[in-house]
Image (cartoon, rainbow over all chains, first blue to last red; front, side):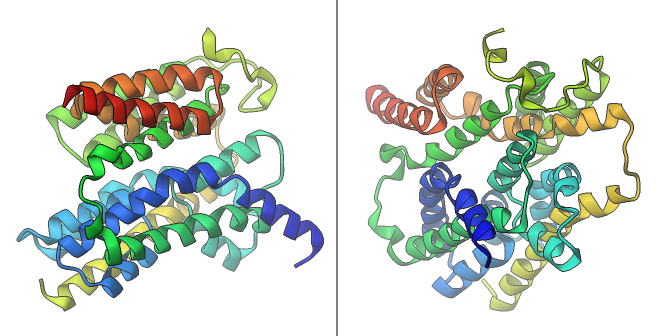
Length: 244
Length: 100
């Protein structure tokens, strides 16, 4: 690794502490629940390593305990992860200079925080290099696996995770990600539309469809609103938009 | 639970997850450059999708969580993410204890 890519890797890694802080407890929670649902330690870690998606893994656990057919479980996993199609379509433009195999590898790691950090980086007009991308990906993936393992081994020691508020760190973290994009044009109408649509869908249709429905509603509104000055994400319009 | 079924679900789940993460780019690559309206739609993806991961917690959990989220939102308008996490976390622990 050259000095500059080492620096880029470290720069990427330096973005991750808030992610690890909220993802770590969630990974432990997943590990503990997996063992509770009859998976052994190896199966738990293999699931985290292969699927690498908290919400999808939680849904899989819930369904594995029922008599739902395996292919329906796989479809439900896809439904939870349909949002990643949008991530991939949105952020693929920043990864297309990687070269085929590196790009193929990079897409495996394109989970929520990875997507948000990559979009932020590009928005600041800075280059998304392979080293930077994996500086973000490696700590998050490592934390996800280590947390799952720890949860599978020691999860039963945590008696009241709710009282500790650990389950709430993840929605909080996602809120932080939403806020990180508030300088983008049309942010407020998109957030309000997505929020309202997803809550309605959550009540009347059910999980996990509320994710796709809410997201599509927000994206559709963004497409319909009048375009404004060329600022599609340059930080020029930054700070201050928050208190409009 | 049958081990074969479990491994099948894990493999299938891994496969569809990867397909979603790579597929969006693969499907779209041949249509680039995109019309401005479509670019505009993709610029909204982070806010649109990430909101759907937070919003249900506002109405489905309880008053402690709803209040803590609103508080965290206000804090996040001014403060960096770690501060918001800390405030939101302290708030939810305190409010849950208060509401019993």
